[in-house]
Image 1: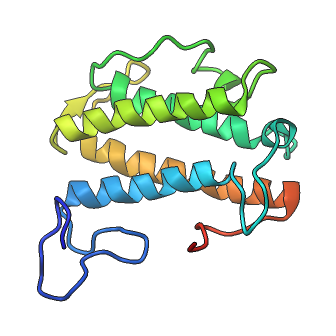
Image 2: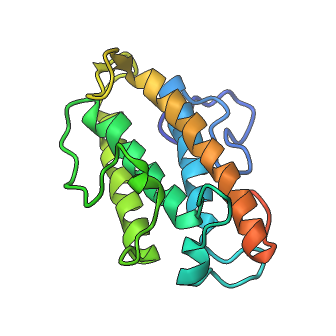
Length: 188
């Protein structure tokens, strides 16, 4: 069985063990890979390797001299999803309660619960996904904070790299908190 964007090449299942398309078109492949690393970001807040999920203190605990925390990274990723995908292509961004152009997007404030930040990330992902679905890869937008325009293709590649990089940071932060490590959920 193939999913939209996959071409049946006659070689059986067209997806790897993570569900990524082996023969999807460029947009489907980029989007599927972005979704995979987005899911890894959320998984770092959950139970890992049989461990329970993190409590509020653990999720917001700064684990580096610069103050990096799991919740801060999720908040930042939500902010940049809105900025790069939504704002750059002329779509409306929900009103933000923090300044995304300062380090406020990297910090979880005392009133920002895991639930609130995860919901914010979910809304940002959904808004970005609408833009990805609506526009061709060659569509051009301009982030208001830059003088250069960018294509949707460029933004997809950039956000794949950005999200994967921060998911790696989250791997380290989570391991420092409770020793949990890994890059995917164990099969049930």
